[in-house]
Image (cartoon, rainbow, N blue to C red; front, top):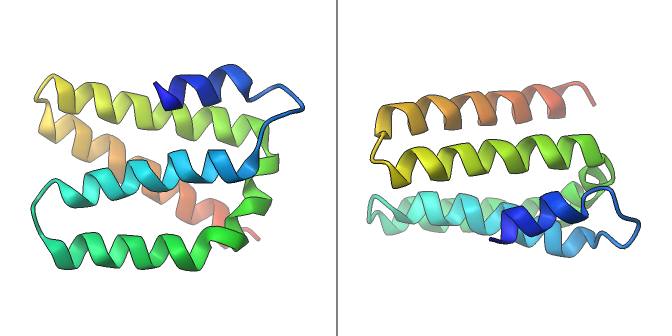
Length: 105
Protein backbone atom coordinates (compact mmCIF):
# COMPACT_ATOMS: atom_id res chain seq x y z
CA UNK A 1 0.00 0.00 0.00
CA UNK A 2 2.79 2.43 0.86
CA UNK A 3 4.43 1.82 -2.50
CA UNK A 4 1.16 2.55 -4.26
CA UNK A 5 0.82 5.76 -2.26
CA UNK A 6 4.31 6.82 -3.38
CA UNK A 7 3.46 6.03 -7.01
CA UNK A 8 0.33 8.16 -6.75
CA UNK A 9 2.20 11.10 -5.26
CA UNK A 10 5.42 10.84 -7.29
CA UNK A 11 4.40 13.65 -9.64
CA UNK A 12 3.08 15.98 -6.95
CA UNK A 13 5.07 18.83 -5.48
CA UNK A 14 4.31 17.75 -1.92
CA UNK A 15 6.26 14.50 -2.22
CA UNK A 16 8.19 14.14 1.02
CA UNK A 17 11.65 12.69 0.51
CA UNK A 18 11.86 11.33 4.06
CA UNK A 19 8.68 9.31 3.53
CA UNK A 20 9.95 7.99 0.19
CA UNK A 21 13.19 6.91 1.87
CA UNK A 22 11.26 5.12 4.62
CA UNK A 23 9.22 3.16 2.07
CA UNK A 24 12.39 2.22 0.19
CA UNK A 25 14.35 1.31 3.33
CA UNK A 26 11.53 -0.69 4.92
CA UNK A 27 11.13 -2.72 1.71
CA UNK A 28 14.79 -3.74 1.74
CA UNK A 29 14.69 -4.47 5.47
CA UNK A 30 11.59 -6.65 4.97
CA UNK A 31 13.42 -8.70 2.35
CA UNK A 32 16.56 -8.94 4.49
CA UNK A 33 14.48 -10.23 7.41
CA UNK A 34 12.86 -13.04 5.42
CA UNK A 35 15.64 -15.63 5.72
CA UNK A 36 15.69 -15.24 9.54
CA UNK A 37 19.33 -14.18 9.50
CA UNK A 38 19.67 -11.40 12.07
CA UNK A 39 23.16 -10.52 10.83
CA UNK A 40 21.92 -9.91 7.31
CA UNK A 41 19.04 -7.77 8.57
CA UNK A 42 21.42 -5.78 10.80
CA UNK A 43 23.71 -5.18 7.80
CA UNK A 44 20.83 -3.82 5.73
CA UNK A 45 19.66 -1.62 8.60
CA UNK A 46 23.18 -0.26 8.99
CA UNK A 47 23.35 0.43 5.26
CA UNK A 48 20.03 2.27 5.47
CA UNK A 49 21.35 4.44 8.29
CA UNK A 50 24.44 5.30 6.26
CA UNK A 51 22.56 6.14 3.08
CA UNK A 52 19.68 8.05 4.69
CA UNK A 53 20.99 11.56 4.02
CA UNK A 54 22.95 10.72 0.90
CA UNK A 55 19.95 9.25 -0.86
CA UNK A 56 17.57 12.12 -0.21
CA UNK A 57 19.12 13.71 -3.29
CA UNK A 58 17.97 10.72 -5.36
CA UNK A 59 14.38 11.33 -4.34
CA UNK A 60 14.10 14.42 -6.46
CA UNK A 61 14.13 12.23 -9.59
CA UNK A 62 10.43 11.42 -9.83
CA UNK A 63 10.89 9.05 -12.78
CA UNK A 64 13.44 7.05 -10.75
CA UNK A 65 11.05 6.93 -7.79
CA UNK A 66 8.28 5.57 -9.99
CA UNK A 67 10.67 3.00 -11.51
CA UNK A 68 11.99 1.60 -8.23
CA UNK A 69 8.54 1.64 -6.69
CA UNK A 70 7.25 -0.43 -9.60
CA UNK A 71 10.24 -2.74 -9.26
CA UNK A 72 9.50 -3.23 -5.55
CA UNK A 73 5.84 -4.00 -6.30
CA UNK A 74 6.83 -6.59 -8.92
CA UNK A 75 9.13 -8.27 -6.38
CA UNK A 76 6.40 -8.26 -3.71
CA UNK A 77 3.94 -9.70 -6.23
CA UNK A 78 6.35 -12.49 -7.17
CA UNK A 79 6.92 -13.34 -3.50
CA UNK A 80 3.19 -13.35 -2.74
CA UNK A 81 2.75 -15.84 -5.59
CA UNK A 82 5.65 -17.94 -4.23
CA UNK A 83 7.70 -17.26 -7.38
CA UNK A 84 10.97 -17.05 -5.49
CA UNK A 85 13.24 -17.39 -8.54
CA UNK A 86 11.39 -14.62 -10.34
CA UNK A 87 11.58 -12.42 -7.23
CA UNK A 88 15.31 -13.12 -6.96
CA UNK A 89 15.85 -12.19 -10.62
CA UNK A 90 13.80 -9.00 -10.24
CA UNK A 91 15.65 -8.02 -7.05
CA UNK A 92 19.03 -8.61 -8.66
CA UNK A 93 18.06 -6.41 -11.63
CA UNK A 94 16.74 -3.75 -9.22
CA UNK A 95 19.97 -3.68 -7.20
CA UNK A 96 22.16 -3.68 -10.30
CA UNK A 97 20.20 -0.77 -11.77
CA UNK A 98 20.60 1.15 -8.50
CA UNK A 99 24.31 0.37 -8.41
CA UNK A 100 24.79 1.63 -11.97
CA UNK A 101 22.86 4.78 -11.11
CA UNK A 102 25.16 5.47 -8.16
CA UNK A 103 28.28 4.72 -10.19
CA UNK A 104 27.30 7.35 -12.78
CA UNK A 105 27.44 10.10 -10.19
